[in-house]
Image 1 (tube, one colour):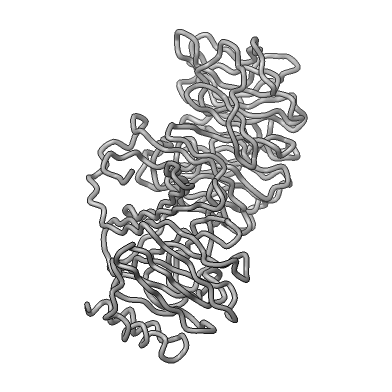
Image 2 (tube, rainbow, N blue to C red):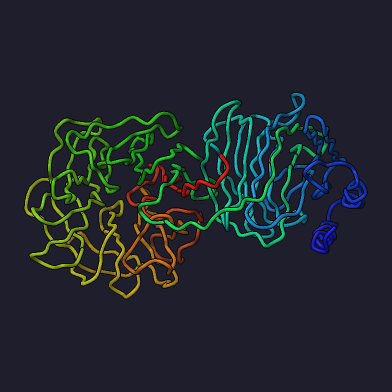
Length: 519
């Protein structure tokens, strides 16, 4: 046994006396691909594991209150690993069980302390399947709920500083969706875990087709717009930090909007616009007539009856803005169409009359600034006159302010301005982040944004980067706080995507395709 493993075991003695020692004593037993097992945390009854070398099946029995919150109670079977790794298994419970939230799954863990950082993919007794994670010792557990319930197989991959979830039903394809940035110090533990969710009982789960392996992945050389990616549409609960996968595709899609009645989401993919129920299901294309080269700057009118799109179907590839019924139309109406310069929609005033967009007007300035137009009539007008980039505008719900991101301070920060262009005011100040696309919540309480690091150019918001979703009080009384860490960027949260009740936000995360990744 390595010295590092001895250290990990020695640090696990906060549980009942003898529980880790029992795991050490039983280490000589055949555990197949693993070399140790033990109860973690304060369990009500000792756990156990059996391994059938002929079938490759593990049966793990465990007590324990939960794997959740700030510390865990469960039985763990593990081996020590470093680098990029994958662990997968078919999972089934033995018997009907007592608690519907009994859990069985695959886990990567920093150590054996009950409050250690970890990531797992677990199947609950009631079928709920999710990736859970704790990103610091004693921190709260968060989860990403998978797009299917009752998964028969789960797969957890650690690739660099990210963990990725894949799930599948019996004989079906792997569905990859959901990632979190969580750096594990090496070595770490990889294995199988079971918790009864009730410390007074013992539950048993059966693991078959268990696969655990190191991944020898070649460096990724293309991370830009040409990179092929998988896309995951997710919903984030902004209070708990928990997430739910709505839809997964092996093609690129971007920029969800949330319908005003809360029932569906809208996004763009391959130049087309699609809608999908908030609960998930099959996306349905919205008819946008001849305009089939839509970019990720689209939205829904305040009354929910209209869709606004930014399309580049013209021979000159310039983005122009059109309005159509939310159900679709053969003939969307052009509302902003400059003959030689692009316009990208971003915000719609609460009264439904004014739209604001990012545009370049070479006859006025080479800079991209905020421009606006009233749908009731009149010429467009310039809202900002920065010599740099002003972008990503969205209205406050009372219509008193327009929030946007700007380079005018020498960093990409959030600003706000009155709808007549007066009183520009800086909103964020931390120059360690490049803040983009501020979106006020419908109740006016919060601002959410996507933040890049300093590894991107000042005026750029590229795809396939480490990004943070950050949120702050709209009154500026506190600085932004991180509520999600993910692989995303361009397309993650470009346009308004709050739920009508201000409790959730829709966004897109990504994963770069690789030929050397497990199928």
